[in-house]
Length: 279
Image (cartoon, rainbow, N blue to C red; front, side):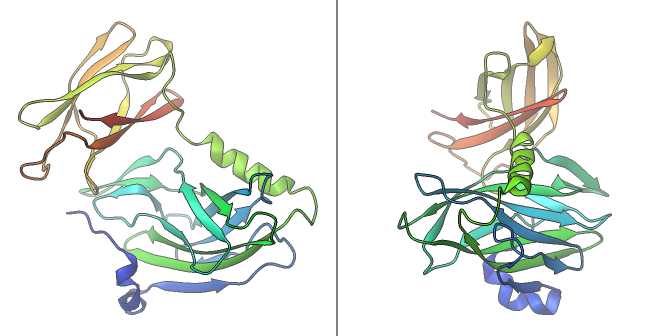
């Protein structure tokens, strides 16, 4: 069973090794916070000044220590999903968080999804009152795991202004993070068709794959907390692949109509993610 750690657990977390940090602004680099440190790694927020519309491009930069991992938005059976929130009372709000393509991590019987090296989660903030000085006051909560999972939380306070240089390092970090995101469906890489079997035991998928490929790694995220990867009856078809994703342990009496799942497809060096909307 997947174990989900939420903010409701933070009060009890200290006894279980929860790392809590308040990270003040860094005077040496106003577009980067200082690093928050834990036993299993470190993290910080990197940001660019607001653009003309008040949008702030930012990222949560995470560096697990060697041998440690951190997690994707659906961590699998034993992980902790990342959470980022703007603190109340500030003039900056969080609009979106994105996730680079994860690895399928296996340790014994556990199947997890995440990152075994440095990763930056792209963030989008917006200034509530455009034209006023902007400051990101945010809280990040992640898990870093080796033999055990350690909840790791830090609160960051980061002024974001147009002053203080070219921001070349921040741009390089955020561009590298964007390059690791899955692409949107396109002419040569997409879901051509999908359907649940009547018994809800399988998801039938037909994929259009790039370069004439006929195999792919597939991660389907269904109801919250459910991740499906096992393929069956895979066969090449013109332009791609037809396969079935096995769906064990779907909630009893699950009604798919009106629901939206997501599918991430990795083929060669490329990855594509899209929504599966059930009608």
